[in-house]
Amino acid sequence: MTTQATQPQYRLEQTRKVGTFPGPKSTELAVRRAKVVAAGVSSSVPVYVADADGGIIEDVDGNRFIDLGSGIAVTSVGASDPAVVAAVQEQVQHFTHTCFMISPYEGYVAVAEKLAELTPGDHEKRSVLFNSGAEAVENAVKVARLATGRSAVVAFDHAYHGRTNLTMGLTAKANPYKSSPAGSFGPFAPEIYRVPMSYPFREENPQITGAQAAQRAITMIEKQIGGENVAAIIIEPIQGEGGFIVPAEGFLPALAAWAKEKGIVFIADEVQAGFCRTGAWFASEHEGIVPDLITMAKGIAGGMPLSAVTGRAELLDAVHGGGLGGTYGGNPVACAAALGAIRTMEELDLNARAKAIEVQVKERLNKLAEESGIIGEVRGRGAMLALEFVKSGTAATTKEPNPEATKAIAANCLENGVVILTCGTYGNVIRLLPPLVISDELLADALDVLEAAIRAAS
Ligand code: PLZ
Image (cartoon, rainbow, N blue to C red; front, side):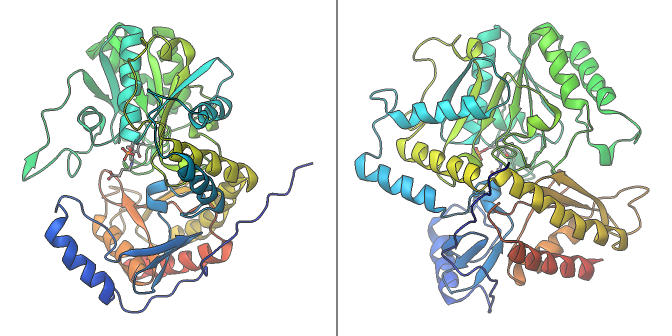
């Protein structure tokens, strides 16, 4: 017998409402912002947030937008989940910080216990907590290098791993992350190598299997680096910023098996795909892979900044005492939020919810893809779904990317009260990342808006 999941409780009215925007208050804030906020930080939406709950973001002028982005896959439990709010309120009344490296506290230990339980594999595990996804990735690489005594790190085409120096180097896309025609953030860290991804929609040979695509990468590693020099292979089991690319079945298991054989640490970067987003606690589970290290952030703490590296005890414990840390890593308020968010994921069975969202969205979009001449592919798992746009009539032949239509569709959605994000190496992917607590009705309304926008651009 399965237990009936409880229903999400909403504080804000879950309906879309857009007047003219940006309204006067947002416009005033934009003027203040331009004088003091660095131009390098841009925002996709021109309104300022006053409140957010469930599937709704309300702006300072009273407009209500449907949120299909979750602040980039963060607020899976909603932006003001009652369990997260209560846990944070309780914690801040007692202490906001002591520094786990100085005077430790239970929340950090409890989060590590939960991560040992939820991550794939029944081996002995250890965790270390940080603040951002990039910081988790940096530390996973540090651990892999120290534990193996090797230095090379292999990343993939279309990868995204962050914006710090090492993670910029791991990230594939130059503009905007690493450089623009105006200049570069480099030089980048050495000993990073890039190999081809399995990207079924864009394979030159559409018949290539996942195992063959893995062999293509492995051969390149063996010829150009030498497996014995590789400390780690890092991969997003479903690539996020690169375009919600789901590798062909068999790709990840073949890579993981080869890494194991060669003593290479297999790091799954689950920063975007983890925590129920794909209908499983971790996207690695869909193909039964057991990563040596997993990096996590985003959805882990219901919007509070927290990240983690969880993995094999012998790897993490290879690091000397004092070798890992940071002032804020595993902040007690963020840990409390994580425990609240994970409880909500369990109580509302958000893995099941993500799968139901996949069914609802794919049914609509697959139908639309048949009629619209510009949808190259509908893909993704759970509530990590995407549409790749191509130039009209090229779907079966050149698959020429259509970033113009992609941009126009996202802009049209926004004008009609739906916040939607784009991504992709070619800027031609619309990604759907709704909060997992969004109601069927609100999601259906957002899909109506998206569908109309796609028709208008077709
Ligand atoms: N690894 C797989 O998706 C963050 C970045 C948005 P941080 N992705 C969103 C942007 O333009 O900055 C991400 C990710 C994967 C690592 C990261 C980095 O996580 O918390 O942004 O550092």
